[in-house]
Length: 98
Image 1 (cartoon, rainbow, N blue to C red):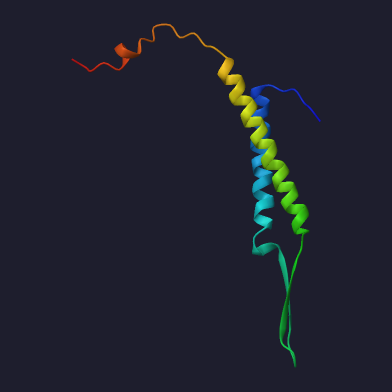
Image 2 (cartoon, helix red, strand yellow):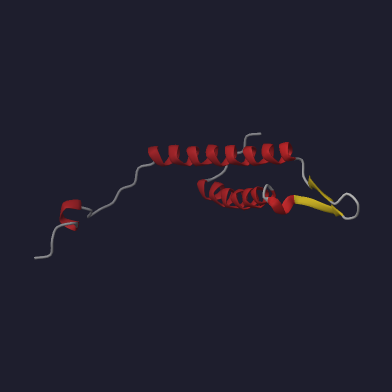
């Protein structure tokens, strides 16, 4: 799906995507594992993931690829956008104070 948006819209969207990516990435940590302990003759613990690891990884990769694509497009647009700054003589601005 292709969507046309302004750079500002894309940056807001990227912020939301980064937040979601952070949430999903935290699920990859130990807190997304259900641990069941059985006590008795055969003491044992069973650890099972609460989420499909492959599906979680796929979603994280999709979000990372989206962010990469948007960041690349923003940088491309910045590379062709020219701005005019009057009175900006770099040598004069950075000259020592006498």
